[in-house]
Image (cartoon, rainbow, N blue to C red; front, top):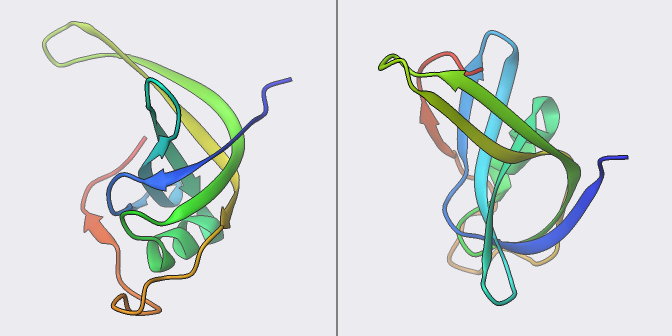
Length: 114
């Protein structure tokens, strides 16, 4: 069984991308503890849209998903890899601050994702 549930605060604003496989949104999550743990969280589809629209740096969230690992060869012919959480649920555990708009556009990047 590969199920991970963590809570933390967004370390950065989420980044939303359109890919050939659909909408993806990624963000870094700072999980409290010593030492502090930073996880990359990846969401897809409707959940990605909700996260991109409503989350900003510092928001408190709970994330449930699976731990994933990608490996590839770079254009310099070197091995590279990354670990991330593929989220199936993101719970918004706080309210946006008064100075944040209720709805906002996430940073968007062009290009095809994986």
